[in-house]
Image (cartoon, rainbow, N blue to C red; front, top):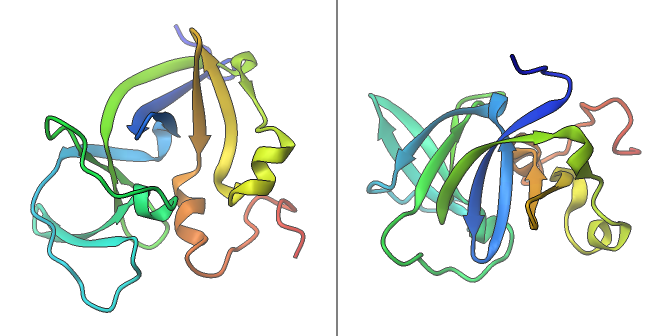
Length: 160
């Protein structure tokens, strides 16, 4: 039996050469890439919407959200990771979903101070070191909040 206090389960995915992870508790499902209907006038990082079992799902490009160059991965392995956001589910386009990893909390460290200065650090929860790999753990809900008003839901993280 897994002790929930000692292990984190992450859905690990790739953007370019970097690996990222969402806490599995935030992930609703993972879908193959499908046709995305553009929504004109929406923010640049919003790819559009897809029909997911009769409901519209907003799809966001994490590459664009993080200011990375836009290029599709080889072999058409892009996936949409659907997360439960406060208002409605949202899908994030990632280059490739690699695995669901169980990571001991002792292998997760805070991001170094200089990293936090150079990027929007509110959504970085930590960096996991696993078998020589570094996985940046991000909070998908915080990524969404950065597009609008950032609310302080962590009790004092953002000194208002």
